[in-house]
Length: 235
Image (tube, rainbow, N blue to C red; front, side, top):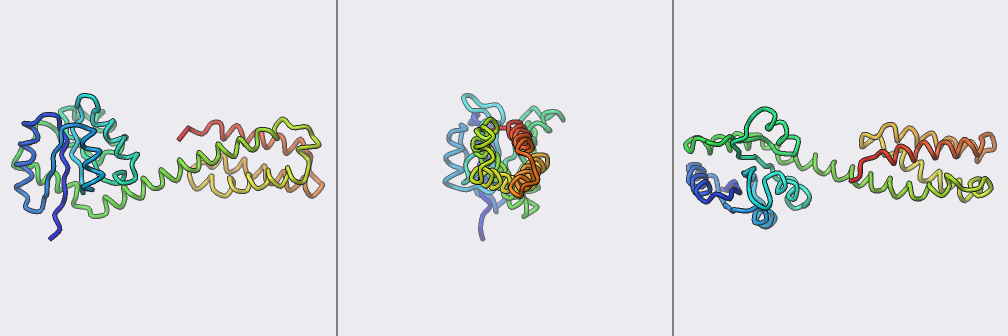
């Protein structure tokens, strides 16, 4: 039988001892404990737990900072994290979930029911896969933002280039290639307006290439697309 691996992180050794004893009531749990965020990051990458129970208030690196590091590492980004904290008001719960936590187990907790509480977060076997897919999509979106910023660097010189240079077949082909790529992908990651502006730029380039559009239309479309890219949040 494969045991469910639970990593518990808390700077208080007494809490770690109680949690280990509480989770030992479930024979299908294997538990490791550590006392710092740095240790948690290392253990999680090596041990690959099925869930991490993470204290919120810890010295040097607190729970939210630890979670951010876990999410930044592809080896640990998909692991569900449940915060354990005395700060369990509704506003805090919403903030923790916004950070990417699966939920919160309030302190003080009942040692006799802690294992069941943890089990409830593991009841849905699709949880990890759902988190994994969400984080993969987030990484792909960040990658698209980086690509768009690089594409902007290609377009910026043309936004102020002399008309002859902007109107050259080589320039128009390069601008169209950039616009075509952004138009096809922007909407996939929620940048519908950017996708629309890229499509408009592609249309303007096609019109100019075929002799019925104006260079000014291409320049204006470049400016509109650059404004959308500039408004994108940095990854």
